[in-house]
Image (spheres, rainbow, N blue to C red):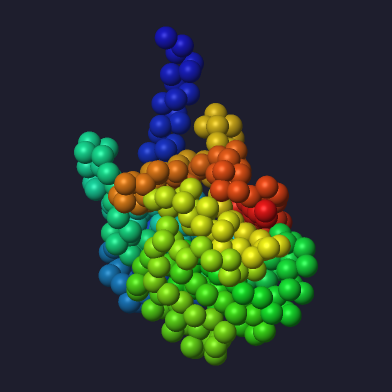
Length: 349
């Protein structure tokens, strides 16, 4: 027994115990809108904060105590304050940089833990329709992310794509969700034609309504199982944003994508930047978050449909292998400034 190592690990577990509870309290603060309330206030009493938020003072006061102990909220002379340096990454005005929303996603996934625990014992997985709240949260984050960055990222990932889209191209997004990426592109490139496919009917309804709200008449959305896509060579550009690793049959989907591209076409696959070797991910800044999210969502939704269960941390080596097996002969992998979490795979024949 290495006593020093044991003591160090106990210290780490104590930190984990405390930070785990801070995470729960941050999630509650996000869901209740307390960070947004605090952001608009000077140093205030718990009574003032409760009144401003429309919540019960005793609960607000106890939550504030946890936030003070966790170093999130400041306290002096009976009053509480959310520093602006903290507010910029904890409020809804932060958009895609709202870390409180990311923390909240772990709480939403934890709500499914009993179903995932059952899958440990019996096999199988937890299907998509058990994750409506989680998907709604990520839809909001994706909407902010695509609105802010997508049009700048596309030319960085694919040279000359801007000219081609401006002139007129046929573009398909697989696993489009609520269609935020497709609608952003459709509004920016009115001469191109955009289609989005997703398995979730409710997401397609939202995507279609968003297109109507934007006046994007060049965008349409359809419910579709990606493994059954028509493989006719019909598309100049196919995109997939964090979607392949969730698929039940990723190899079949990639093969169909390859066959669906016109000569000279491009597949842009945006997926988690990671290594296929677990040991190499020990230094990944978001490693535990990604593996946990994969276990509680990405991997299990694939296994729920008797899928391969690649998981979110399938890594670059595995991704290259599957793209090559699908028939792509030219594969570039890029990391773009401002998006450390994702790798941009540009695949051509």
